[in-house]
Each structure stands twice: as C-alpha cells, then as structure tokens.
Length: 221
Image (cartoon, rainbow, N blue to C red; front, side, top):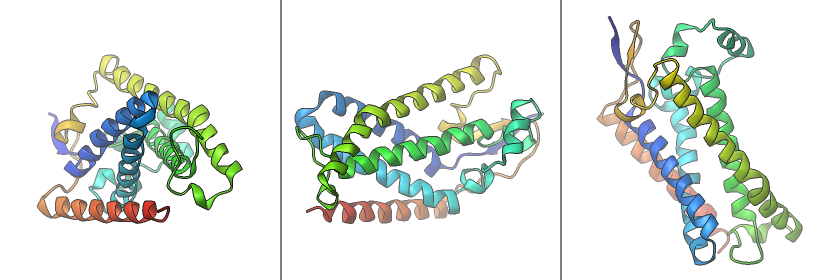
C-alpha cells in the first residue's frame, strides 16, 4: 500500500514555479530587447533573490529540500545509472535530478552575474558594470548572450525531457508533487516539515534576500 508523504514544502514549490516564470520572462524580454530590457534586468534581480533564498532554504528548509538530502557521491550516481537505486532516490531528487539542480544553479548564477556587470553597448548596461574594466564587461555580455543562454536552454530542455520520460516510460509523475507537495511512496519515509512557522521563516528569508539584492544593485547607482 502506498504511503503519501509530504516531500516538497510550500516554499520549495513556490520557488520552483516562480523561477520557471522568471526564466520565461527573461527569455521574452531578452529577445524583444529595447525598452523591454528594463524589465529584463528587474526579472534578473528577482532570479538572484530566488537563488539566494534557495541556497539558504537548502540548509534550513524541509527535509527533502535540504542539500544534505541530495548531495550524492559519484558511486551513488553510478549505482543509480546501473539500476541499483537507493530507496531515498525515489523520494526527493534522485542523483540525476540532483546533478540537474546544481548545474541549473551554476548556470543561472553565471547568467545573473554576467548580467550585473555586462554592457552590450546598445540597450543595456549592468548596474555593477562600473566596477569592472570595459573589456571584462564586454566579455561578460558575450558569455551572457553567446554561451550562458544556450547552456540554460539546454538544461531546461533536458529537464523537461527527463520529466516526460519519467512520466511516460516509468509512470512516475514528478510534476504533481511539485504542485501539491505530496508523493505516494512504496515505503514509509520521513516527511518534510511544512507548517506556518516554516512558511513564515521562508518569507523572512526571502525578504532578507530581496533586501540584499536591492543593496547590491544600489552599489552601481
């Protein structure tokens, strides 16, 4: 008999869908260009806020949202690929999902960082551009447009493909738990804490991250 367990707490779920919405907004405003770049930068600041929040939430959040629950050794990844999955791999992020999460974080942080210091000499100059040499600002913009965005789209495509693969081939719906938070498991497992106190903590952390990003951006004023 399946055991229904709260795997993804509300802050984690809101982070996931908010990040997806922001990345979509970045794509739209980036390709429109011109006056839309004002919103492109604002959405970029929102992404940085979300990423900082998730880094903190990866330490103090719900059990399965914590990095400690999905930092796997190379041996665990290899065992998973060979079909020898550990029971915990069926609960939160499996080893491949964990690799995807950390890769996405790295690429998004690089995109935000290069956006902050970049200068395309046309429609956008990052708020922290004045702190770097002109050549570095131009190099940051080149990476942002020519390398970073394609790395990001590749990771997103792989993520969607993996979700569809698990849904169609393995009959494992990874989307529903990221909506309602619960997952039906073949065995009992510890649940992620998800109550009013943890949600208020998440809200406070998000506010702190937002203020930190606002301060960072103000340095270029």
